[in-house]
Image (cartoon, rainbow, N blue to C red; front, side, top):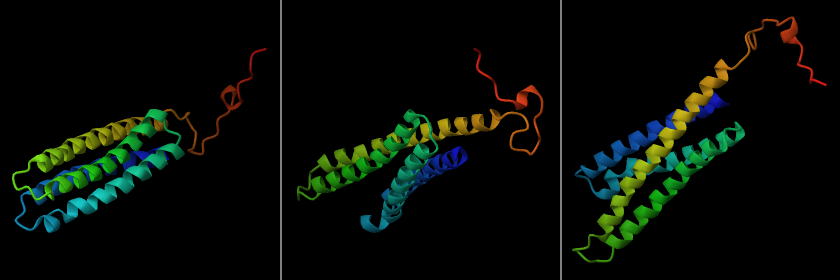
Length: 160
């Protein structure tokens, strides 16, 4: 389960990197905004679902509480992304042609994206460390069909 968690965490980081690429390609596209940002918007929903799934898998895998919280933080920050985008559009729809409030609010969208990247990267780094330690902490012979005999095969008896 820890390997699955680590794989999902790495997938989330890759999706966030792709999200930055789609944002940049949409920003420099000559197509209308709705059309040019379509891949960016669609991947945003995938990132949200992936972050929620990552949080659920973290809880099921009994990861440390801080790691579960960090995965949940990534999902929460994606929700904040949507709120920022809606607020920025609302400021731009006021009809004022000289308005920069929408642009200022929308600038927070990029900063929040960096926060999502930091949270996802932190989760991926910790998940890889935990998944590696789970493999190296196994006793010799465990899981490979080898029988363990002698004192190591008996459970330790509590001291009286």
